[in-house]
Amino acid sequence: MVLKDLTLFRQAALVGGQWIEANLANSNLIRNPATGEELGYVPELGTLETRRAIEVARVAQKSWARRTAKERSSILRRWFELILQHRQDLARILTLEQGKPLAEAEGEVAYGASFIEWFAEEARRVYGDIIPGHHPDKRILVMKQPIGVVAAITPWNFPNAMVTRKAGPALAAGCAVVLKPAPQTPFSALALAVLAERAGLPEGLFSVITGSAVEIGAEMTSNPIVRKLTFTGSTHVGTELYRQSAGTIKKLGLELGGNAPFIVFDDADVDAAVEGAMIAKFRNNGQTCVCANRMYIQNGIYDAFAQKLSAKVAKLRVGNGLESNVDLGPLINAAAVQKVEDHISDAISKGARVLSGGKAHSLGGTFFEPTVLCDVTGAMLLASEETFGPVAPLFRFVNEDDVIRQANDTEFGLAAYFYAADLARVFRIAEALEYGMVGVNTGLISTAEAPFGGVKSSGLGREGSKYGIDDFSEIKYVCLGGI
Ligand code: ADP
Image (cartoon, rainbow, N blue to C red; front, side, top):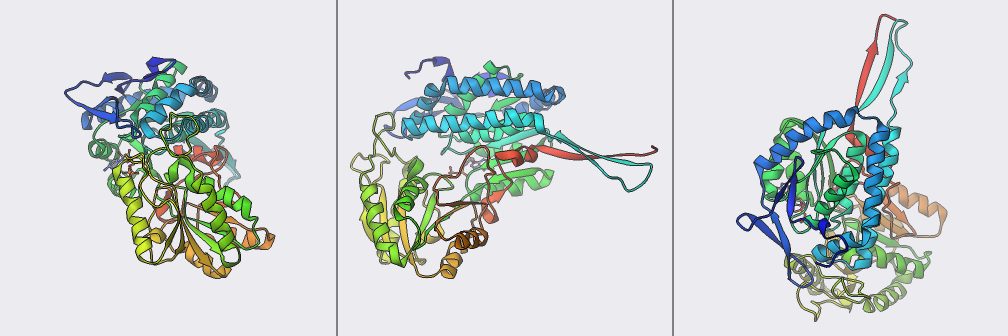
């Protein structure tokens, strides 16, 4: 692998401060999704290593919590700076294991780093309260304390940023983190761990365990030392982890699936809406949980929008993310391609028409043509399931009440987008959408300063923003009597 700093590429796991190297007897092979080439190995670990990491984390966390917030902040700040310094290498590792174009990978690394920066700052602003009391000789104090050992499970679509978005606030609050990265993309997480060590993060505070999801997950959810589980992934796995965590009453942060509506009203700026749709739909090849999944276009501008969008989509360049001038990389695996194909063929069999793309790309592998479908209806699979691929399905709608009903007619509630000019309408729609995040006249909403999270089956809790650190703190009420 061509890197400026080869030591960032670790074929190992980090368990309670000890690196465990991959060995051929008991390791998993990771492949580049663009070429199928072998990238490297990580060890197949399980229950025992997870337990050890948790036990070491408990000890490390106690002394980490006793440090001043400023000391924690300074180490996180150094970590942030190192991530930016090694941005190109981290992006290269990311593209090699995940497939997204290099420029997009660099963008993710910067976005990921921004969570470490933000929470390095927030670490010093975890304030308590003194509450006016209920009795003359008593005083009511509220302190916020780190929740303790945190287990984190992350997905493959953002191998860097999903790690930092969890580890940043947890470490800032004074917690320790035991992380299980996605099996497809462990190397980005391991590179972050190398840099965390270099930044001076004390041993045992941040473990990265690779291996059996079932074993690692079972230990994380059943071990009483773990006080919080933070997970980003599918609703199916999130539900299972929620169930498994019941026995030890853990706090949970769950960022699960989405089925984002993207609504364009007649009074919108159509060109701006097309630009927004390109970002909201095709970023990361449609593989983000906030990607537009259903595009509702009002009758009066439907044809103009469809024509402009498909013209732009037809110009997208598909290829190996390491090559220059590539807009879309491969999909993550064959199952992802299958889902996209199933959604398209179901839609066509029920009357949808292909305006652009529609089939596997001539490059082969898991490359797929970015696709625009029109005449899409609520009866199609695309309406109820998250496609997680480069397909823009265009639904036609006539009136506001009807589109709100359709937009909310899903178990999910993560992100929603709409384009409109009328101020009263903007407020009406923003309030009526049952989603945790709403983009108005923009297709890009994620940033460290804002609370990321969903409602309904899209999850629990918020990441990023001033609220993000609360999810890793406990409130303690101290009643002082006899005063
Ligand atoms: P996706 O289908 O997008 O890969 P998943 O929800 O399956 O989403 O995966 C997200 C993360 O959850 C990954 O790190 C994966 O290994 C992990 N995971 C999957 N199944 C389990 C499980 N039973 N216990 C714990 N983690 C799991």
